[in-house]
Length: 130
Image 1: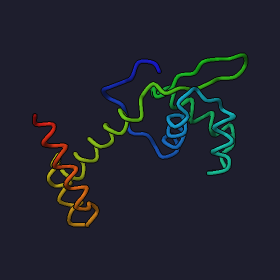
Image 2 (image 1 turned 180 degrees about the vertical axis):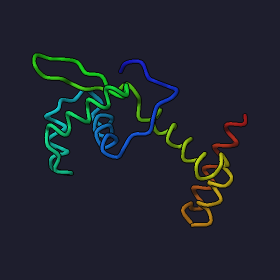
Image 3 (image 1 turned 90 degrees about the vertical axis):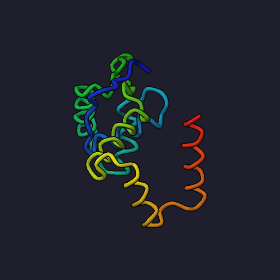
Image 4 (image 1 turned 30 degrees about the horizontal axis):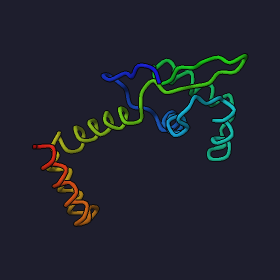
């Protein structure tokens, strides 16, 4: 994988994110044909739609390609973890005004966290403090 963009990565529309998720899961460069096979079944997208979205992802510096003959193989420039962290920060800012306590409170109140989840979080915080 090439150098990762750490600051200023933008949010991706769902269509571009769908492509990135396939590229991230592949763990190796993928061709347009591979993406078309998956997205043609899942979303009924044409190859030209996928190529337009890949071009946008290139412009945004999320992917780069290597040419092998006439074919392009795409690889991520931004890891899934870096993107996930960025999205989490944005979500926390927009919905909870940067309050981790507010986020956890909402999850607990809606019963989205089990007692085991809560215990794991406590252990992670305690381990981080040492």
